[in-house]
Length: 64
Image 1 (cartoon, helix red, strand yellow):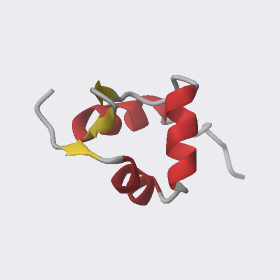
Image 2 (cartoon, helix red, strand yellow; image 1 turned 180 degrees about the vertical axis):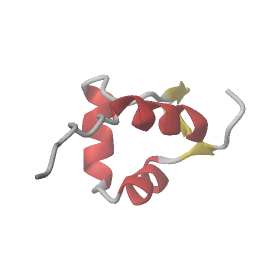
Image 3 (cartoon, rainbow, N blue to C red; image 1 turned 45 degrees about the vertical axis):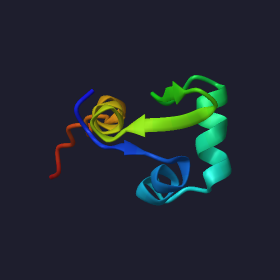
Image 4 (cartoon, rainbow, N blue to C red; image 1 turned 180 degrees about the horizontal axis):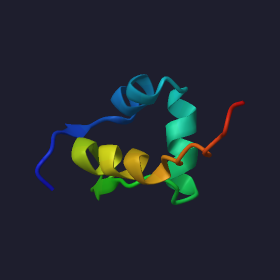
């Protein structure tokens, strides 16, 4: 883990979602996080890799 650790509010802003959504993602194990005592933190590099892994390839379309 080499990147900056973010708070849930920063992650919410980064992904343009509500902070409650970030906590739901954590609860369901959907998003990578680090627990430091009672504090949740998110490694920025891990989040970017996670997003890249969620990316889908566009379907090839042939246009006439």
